[in-house]
Image 1 (tube, rainbow, N blue to C red):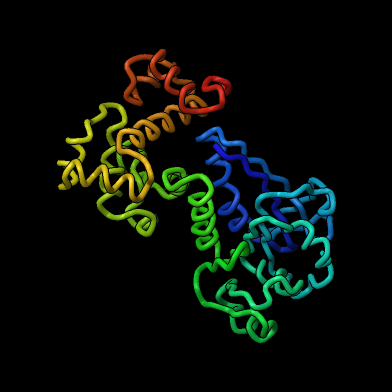
Image 2 (cartoon, rainbow, N blue to C red):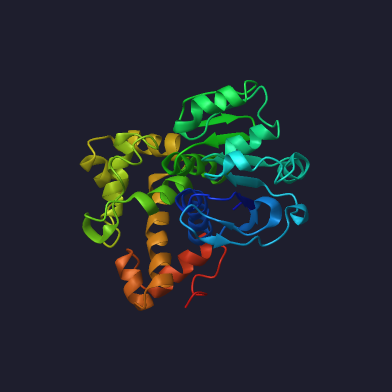
Length: 307
């Protein structure tokens, strides 16, 4: 599993919701897969900033002390018109050197002020598109929910930020990891066990046929079903089902089903006091020994470390 170092730059009056939509999916990837995902919090001007709801955040380190992150997340705030010169273009350029950059909410405004978006495509919060285009005529402003131009990714709202982060996770860690990370926040709790996957929120992530099979899997974690039975219930041939999983998630149905059950087991291990034997049974394993062996085989972190 690949490692990733992330620097999150918060600007004054930033949105807590945008921050959560960008950071929490990475936390899920770390917790569910054991990937080495680390982040630090930076602030404009290396000073304490407040969110739009008044939450005060202090920087963990100076921008100049940050060492070559793989990903830089810039979350602009409502005070974006007054931030010119607070964080110099030189220090911002040094921070972003070689990294993928995700600029959310009014983050594109911060990048454009430093000249980083000249001759590039970009977007930001929909209410500011016209003003942004007038202020920065060298930027090709698009009304899309999110825009990728080279290593610069821009978006506006919190919902678009979540979509963009899931796209980044898909490219970095694989389609199945991104699908699981999205489903962690968007699943429908009205379904049995609260384990089903969304019908609408992830409609663009996978095809309806594949989504139907994943829902069947998520509803049968305890009493697992063979792949031919899943294909029959989804009105698709087994061969087509296997091809579907490989094309869209780059894995086999059996492998994905196993990871789904292990993800549920890890969640119960971390957040419940249910015995290991009971967790094994609830996740379709014969006993605790089989579950533990499978966890150790598929995840780099010790499965019982959190207990």
